[in-house]
Length: 466
Image 1: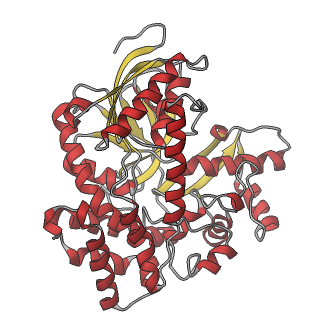
Image 2: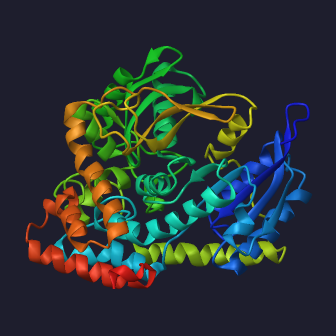
Image 3: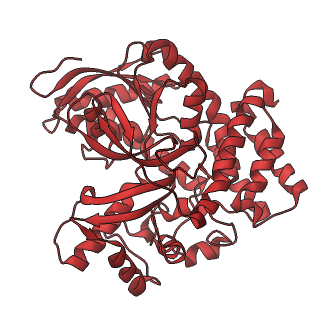
């Protein structure tokens, strides 16, 4: 890579899933806003038409006055063409169609098992993993063959299992998973601190936290702003606002199924003394199924939402219509910061600075010593030139470890099942999942559910499952 006055202008990046209707645009905007980086992005997608449409949108940005980083977008027709000799690989794929997702999310409801997202934990997350992991193995093998020294950033859910699959397939891979849920919790802490400390504007990056847990079930055991401990401030806010919750003025929860009042987060703090650092939709799926997700009325009481597949279909139709307007020149893509840190991470990895950010990587004894070594955990890490060094998060408190452990065990079972086509391992994981076990203990019914969910996604499964 070529340096010129603290700028790297010839970065080669592959985007696997480059026809994305959401994440690709966010990355394009962030790249356009970063003056220190430039180069080429190769878009690869099994839907090549979608990649070509994103190529048009990406290349339109070069002519915009807001654009500071110059990038050339190209379409690759194969993984080899996309990956050969690149410096970075971004993976953001959607495994299957909305019909498979409908089965993931809604079929378990017949047993009273409700899922607010259905892509990480619970039955939906596990079945989604079975069709995603073979794709990740193929990508990892291609990275091993065509760009073994590239840094690999994964955005696909279920994140823990996707990252685990990359390392199982290619142990020397330089990969990490990125998630913005921690950033959202930092933002809430910043807004609460602004009122308590009578400060007009606190940036969420200035909220210093220690992160520990697994993706979408992360926790802070310390949080501070300029030396001020935020735990007492957070506790006092909860004491006065528990019933009403926290309403982000930028994202009122009533207006979107993705938003919430953070009452689940507040309740978990009252129960366990640590700050749960993800959205309520995700947090609730890791807890027993008879608590926050007991039924739709319970969900309403806790003031978050069930993200239905019908809503996702409607959202996709709106994105497709918008993409059509952008390509036709009837509308411009917004160039605004996404709130993600992927581009800042790349900037540090090419040697332009140093960054501390939360990442999902295999656990070492340094990170969370009382969780299984090698399991993918989420902790802070230091990014610098061609280096990611995990920061010791310390042990997770035993009461929280008991909540996290079933999910770590299930990650192991599903990872093995994906490679061996072992239905019994999937049944075992279902029965070990807190959403399932606290709603249904009839093994025959659970086996029937597993069989139907696997059949409903078999078009995206290896032949071994058939």
